[in-house]
Structures are given as structure tokens and as C-alpha cells.
Amino acid sequence: MKGYRIAPFAERHRCAVIDLWAACGLIRPWNDPDKDIDRKLTDPVGQFLLVLTGEGESEAVVGSVMVGYDGHRGSIYYLAVHPDHQSAGLGRWLMEHCEQFLLALGCPKIGLAVRRSNTAVLAFYDRLGFAEDDAVLLGKRLIPDI
Image 1 (cartoon, rainbow, N blue to C red):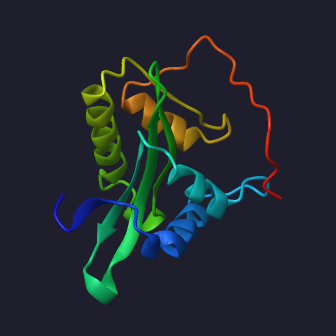
Image 2: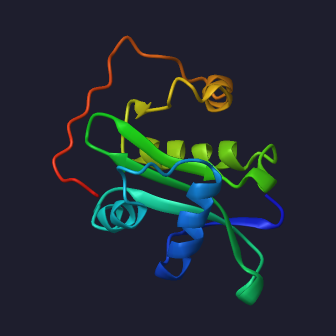
């Protein structure tokens, strides 16, 4: 996409990524974004990708996604596009990148979680061909972040 590029996360982007997640409403009090980044950086299989615009001092992080693969299902987390750049196709572009990465690994299916109250994001994934599975997402906190 003209004016944008996808690049792997680099440490110099950490603060800008956390600011992006805050602008997109992805941060919750029970999840420390710094710890989530640190944990992702230990993942030997997945990717942590950013959408960048500008160069040098004017470089800006305008999108992000974490993608993982457990041998059965790919997972997408922290897909975010800054509100000022939404509706430009960047979210779709990131998802296409993730799908190609997962297909190259032989991944048969992608799973992701979206809060039911986030109707705009549910509509976005619906347009990309995602549908609600007949499954219940369960969670158990093993390490408290707060």
C-alpha cells in the first residue's frame, strides 16, 4: 500500500505500539502491554508485525498484529489500526499477511477473540470471512500482570 510498509516489531517501536493499542481501546487493566510484548518476543514461531509510515524522525506506527501458530490453529492478537488510518485497508492488508504466513506453515485454521460489545470489529472480521465458531472461549490467569 502506497505510503505504508509492514515490518517486524523493533524495540524502538515499543512506546508507539502501546500508544496505538491505547488509541484503539485494546489495553485492559489486567493485561500489562509491556509484558505482552516481552512474551511475544520469546515466541519462536509467530510474528509481531507493524504497519509503519514515514521515515527516520517522521516514522510512525499506525498498525500492529501478533500472529501465532500452535500446530493446529493460528491465532491473531492485538490487530490494531490507528483511528486516523482506519478504512484505508490496512487491517485487511495485515490479515492477508498473517494468512499467508500461516498458510506457509501448513496452518488449517485461524482463531481469534473479539469482545461481543465491539460490533465494528466483529463487522470487520465478518467482511473478511470469519464466523463465530460453536465453541466457548475459556481462560484462566496463570501469572497476574498487576
